[in-house]
Image (cartoon, rainbow, N blue to C red; front, side, top):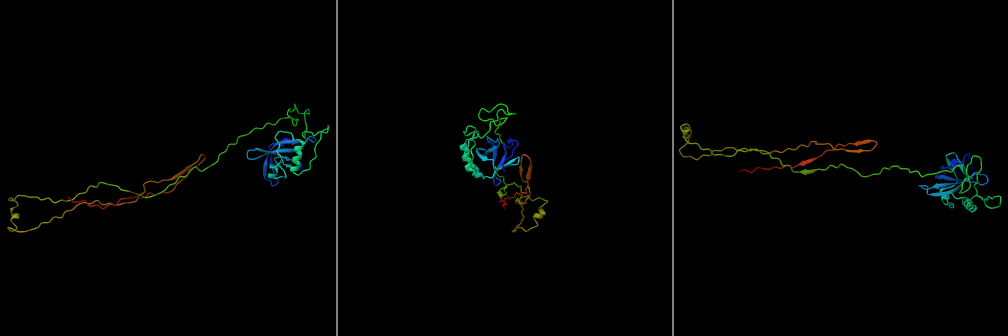
Length: 263
């Protein structure tokens, strides 16, 4: 279906879709037929940054006001004969393009029989002021384009944080005061007060007297008690998320059984 446009400028920047509705690129320039002044070709910017330009015929294209649909594949468009952007199409250029897209080619002639420019010079028409010095005047205005910088962000992994619990053994030394009993020999002279007790036994005898001694020993007991809670948290610019996990810390103290030597 041929493109039917009241204003060909509507094609500027339109998205070009191929035979399988895959995106081929965007319209950069429109080329007009010299006799009919109708749009005949469009240059399409392809590639991630629009670095490639290919010409596509409009004879079988359909434009819905936003997307331009053409019955060609991406490979077919990319392999089209190269044409420098902004340069007029010569008859040989058109012939190569028509042959590539498998279309019948009928060259356009000017009044003097020479091959003419396919675009009509509209200089002097009503509403068109001035003229283009670089080629035929095809519009009343000169389009101006500019590159726009699109800056975005992406999220990437920078590292990981982990909590690991393991058991460590430490020796803790505590000074504990302990007491013990020691033997002390006490002597007292014979007096009138204790003479009766002293004379109660025999004159000369063999005897034994025993005293039980005691001492204190350090006793150690252990108890596992929670001493703190450790958590992992994450934070972003727009939100805050905290991840909390219960953690326990196990710690082992040395259990020693030491006997204090007697002096």
